[in-house]
Image 1 (cartoon, rainbow, N blue to C red):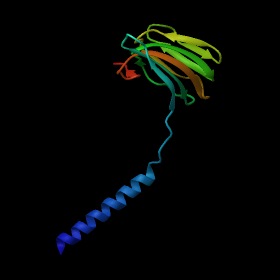
Image 2: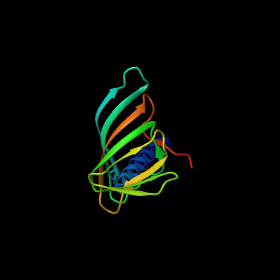
Image 3: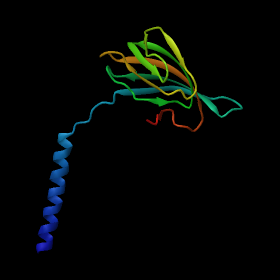
Image 4: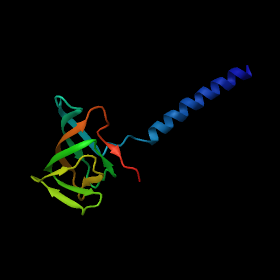
Length: 136
């Protein structure tokens, strides 16, 4: 009888505890939204071309990272803050484009509190993650 009471009490505590913690931590929307629009292999190579849109929340900075290839991008909305290691930071505005060399370590984000939308073409090595965090 004691074992049965302990089991029922434990199960009740677990259920009440998980329900309470689920109510305390509402899910927050991601500050990054990626919309893939297309992908095609580059014939006779180990590369593929990926086209997509990236939207960043106002004030968000991605952290230092790289891509396994080169990138060409165009700012469609907002202002894009961009810092490549070893270079001066830049702000790109609507209608401006920029390129990123293969595997260049950089940080990026929305300049100010307004969100930013960037269309990008990646020419990257097949099978590698599109975003690789930089070692600090």
